[in-house]
Image (cartoon, rainbow, N blue to C red; front, top):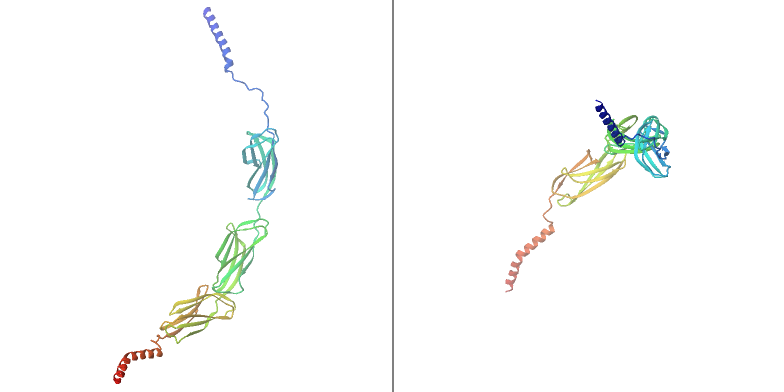
Length: 382
């Protein structure tokens, strides 16, 4: 028993000795005291905002300069921007050389309210609290646009049916800000006839916009109204009234001349057009018809009020019984009430004149009887 105990003690002692020899090779290194790390000498300088008062949805631009005051390059820098201490943008991997700087800008949309905008740096993920800089801004609710239609002018004091009428609208921006996405709608008797979109106006500026259409007779109401981004501005509606008169044009006289209307001879028709109205009329056309088929026309005729003009046309006559008529139009709109017509008879051309006929007969007589006469005279001489 004592021998067994002695052997066990010796074995345990040997094992402990062996463990003591091997243990240092597997020992876990314990952390030593923290070693001082070199800190990057970087700061944010010249942190500016494009303004300190904004209107909602305006662009805000922050400009800043990262300055490295150290004698060694600084890398792995991150720039963070925060609004009311909540980060909304960051830029990583910035490097700045020794004793140099880097300028950075960022733009975003303003949100209504009073806000603190901060910028701060971090290096290798470690925030440099001493680099934080803060600016305060106020973002206001935009005022409703102060747009007006200051004038609507209609071309001419009196408007004639089928004649062009032009409305010119003056839009004025009385506000202190640019207004875009403006639309102009034009109405005739409260039905929209035309619109123009994507109009922009600087502050305290105006523009003139015109539209032309063909007038229809009657008492008409012309209105103009504005909209922004599709939302109508009812307070901008302006209305004007016009009276469109029917044209008072007439074909008052027609003369037809020719050589007794004989086939293959020229016929000339002269038409007198009279404007009985109190306003000038333009874009008049005269159409001339032979047997109800148009053979000629003249366009771009203009007449002052209470004035007339004569228009003529010549063509070669064809035999037969014919109807000659004339009619007016304005802007290609026929005026059936102005149609006037006449009937003429064109005689067939004679076979030939009398002199030619007598001469021909004389030649025939000589050709027939001259040989006989010569023979008779010749016999008598014998």
